[in-house]
Image (cartoon, rainbow, N blue to C red; front, top):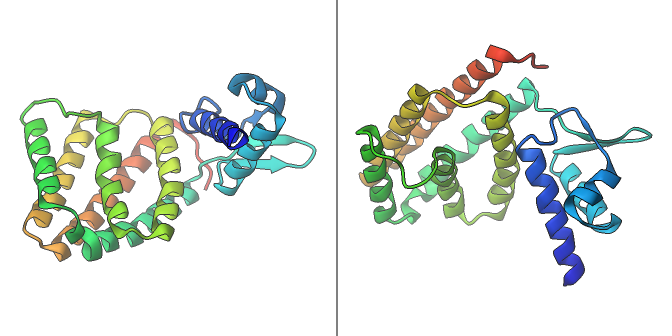
Length: 218
């Protein structure tokens, strides 16, 4: 149990540094340095690197070392293509598993935010929780695993693209509100379509931010 715990701790620590871009894309990370930074021996660190390679967050290059994976425009397209297939489907078929009280709480929080009140959680947490609840509602382990991989890359995208504008934040809230209103009416077709619309706007906003200050590979 202790070895598993050490492996998990090393994995969590290294992954967090990758997701917050402390270890930037396309940079090499040294195994010895990793051991020092996460206070772990060789075995837990190597196990963590192996797991992160499977998740597409690092690449092990023979005779070169461990490189943090890039996040290209084509990968972002694939992420949104997968989200477009998965999230509207989850709402359409499993949105009714979520209690109406949950939808009502989001509705009230969103309305309050648009009137100038603070959200009871950070903007990023709000976004994560809202999308994750539809995937969780499916109870499908394959959906959950796929979304876990996607969500890791979404966190990196946020860091790499910079802070979104207050205008885009309010637009996101409005888009979430539209989904929530449909869910409260139990209009699952409408909620599914509203999610497709939201993902389309989200993808466009990400690309707009990325193209402003970065050179990205295709």
